Amino acid sequence: MPKLFEQNFLKAISIPIQIIPSTGSLNGRAIETRSLSNAIVTGTADSNVENKLHDTGVFTEDAKYYVGMVAYNTTDHTYAKVIAKDSDDQLTLAWDAFSDGNEGFKLYTVSETLSFDTALALIEIGDITGTPTSVKIKVEEDDDSAFGGAAVADGGAEITVAADHSYTMEIKRTKRYLRIVVTTAGGTTPTVECFGAFLLWNAQKPFPRLSADDIDNS
Image (cartoon, rainbow, N blue to C red; front, side, top):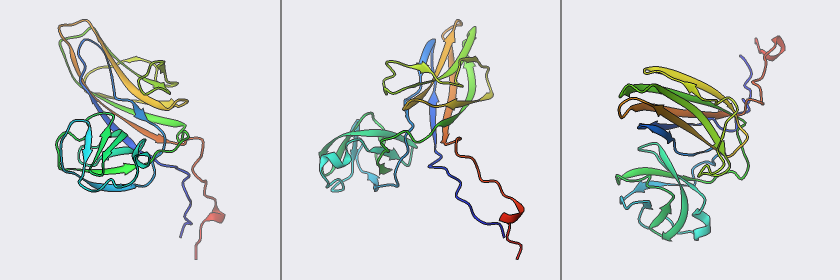
């Protein structure tokens, strides 16, 4: 039997983003590219207050324990950063990731260092309406989640796209956040359906090579 080898992935995660822009440019939500811990807290949101995560009696630790964690919505597959603790029942989030109520959640801590040197952007372009003269996509990165100093990521240079096509970009990462940017020009109130996901991994750590000596033939 072949021997088992550790594949040297810290973590490989895929984060979906749906973007439907109109004329001009629309930015996908910033994606945190540092690795996450195993789930620290799990539960079900029992309220749908805007920008809040509510689960009665669950958040009993001090505020500093929760602030900076990532709250992952296991129902909608969205996530948001925890920015404050309101009470033992409720946390405040950076955006409204739990808008429907009765949605599962997991809380993760975030590594303090960059954990992935490579990102594969998978981008699907669906319907394009309004006959724009061009539709373009690119991937940007920044250390600021607001992208105040956004730069085009290495490998994410802008390309012109067409409806009903899939595109991939292999990104060499140097900064903390990534996002997909869709830009349209011309046409009559054009819209574009776009779905994107990032697969994050460490390409600098190669898969192991197997030789004849690595195979147990007994």
